[in-house]
Image (cartoon, rainbow, N blue to C red; front, side):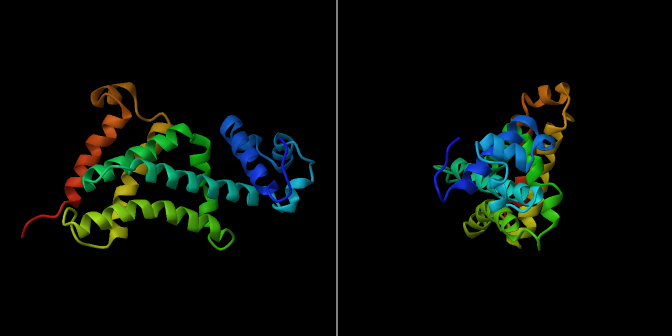
Length: 202
């Protein structure tokens, strides 16, 4: 892989992401990343002092990709309930398509807000897509009033749990058959969740 002056960092991040997706975090190192990017073994140290810094940057990139995926799922969808469904479906499918990246994004690095503030901000931006859907639904009188972050956390926790159960192989075939697919399960569970968010007449 060749690169031009000024985009070495991006080339390294792409190489690290490719390694993570293909081989998992155990094989990811600064040296392996340099080899994948086709640069000298010392080149990564121009941008990353250690492996953990590289992982944090890859995680930040992952959240940006997740945000793009969620925003794309909302294109052309106007009804708030369906918007919430689409965000959930997009989230779980992102996890299924990027298991190693997804685990990294929500791994121990997320507890180090002081060391990696950009990672935290990127995570918050992707979560902001969900909050925007809820806030818009509240403004249109579809979802009940309340702190969007509280409602969003309830929705996110449910979807995040299903995503991890799927990745860990904890959804046996008999459960999937009942709902036809993981996506069918998510929509059924989502209906129950959304029913709890819907504004009720006084």
